[in-house]
Amino acid sequence: MLDEIKLFLKYFEKTYQKRNIEDLEEFMSIFFSKDAYVFGTSTNEIFPTYEAIKSCIRNDWLYWGELYIKRDQLDVRMIGDDVLVHVLGSVVYTFSDEAETDQKFVKLMEILNEDVDINDENHLSYQHHEMSYILDHYLSKREDQKRINHVPLSLSFVLTFDNDALKIKSLSYDVLTIDDYPDAIMHPYTPYEGQFNEDMNTLKTHGEAITFNPFELDIDKDFYVVDTDGNIKYDQSSLNDILNQYDNLEVDMNHVLLTENKEYISFMTIGKARLNRSELEIRNSLKSKLSAIIQSDLDDQSKLFKIRRHISLTDKICALAPQLVYPLKIMGVISVNQNENKLKMLKISYPMDIILEDKYI
Image (cartoon, rainbow, N blue to C red; front, top):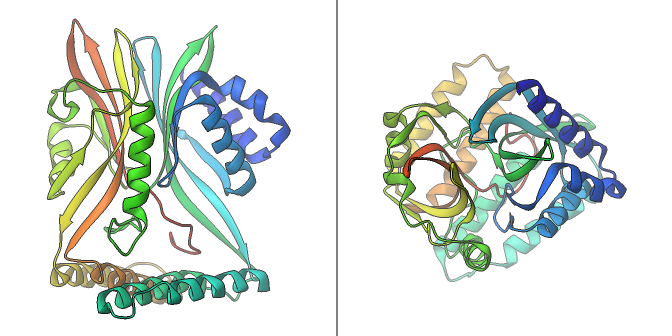
């Protein structure tokens, strides 16, 4: 089975890298079941139907970076007759020093500078820190003609057999969060609450209800949870630690994308995470991070770039603190055995905002 999964992922990756739009129909028929659903990396990327997934793939091939899958780092579990797969990967972007790109970023700076309430001191502060945060990334290490950015991903699949061929039943693409503060924060100054509401409307149209709370179930014997940084953990205490990091967690289980049979239930939905953090807490956290960077094995120039980025991000977060509300993506699998439900897998991730140069160095 493991070799079969690796071969499936190999051809999935290679076709993504080939990016031939003429192959799209064949790609869909080979890799996706007709009732599949997909979550993309960002907000407003819920694809609840076969045709919506096809549109997602087309846009990926036209505009996304180059997808790589680390097939040597697989977690494969049988769920009845189907297969649950978790694997790490990356999307690789190549940036170059072009006048046209600079012009686009100047235009973005103009939009951010004009789109602000000049009578709102906090909004001015946030918008200026947002501009600084973007430019800290965009202007980093520009002595090279080309800069390559590896954005770390995790991918979680539910695969089913169709005439002895593996096909995707559900898939979540997730960008790993490597610091405490993801880009997408729900606040009147940001667009993410509106986007969250649009996503909820999509789920209300296409989703179904689960009549019990998955977070209150006992865990299965081979349970695992995927944290927002992509790490896999295997016990109840780790699950509790992840859930308890939030001051409040809201997940609507009345509208989820759902696969249900006599052996398992697979679901994908969204939620909100609320954290209350004072500026003192945030800056103490920054102090620890800067100490770790200074003591790290990075070269001195990389240390300086990374220090500057963390300070810029912290200023941006402090402009929105003390209450931080993040949209969440949630995927889970529940095993069903003699009418007893147990949580087999849970994955929590943050939607990604925009791709910034050198963000993950």
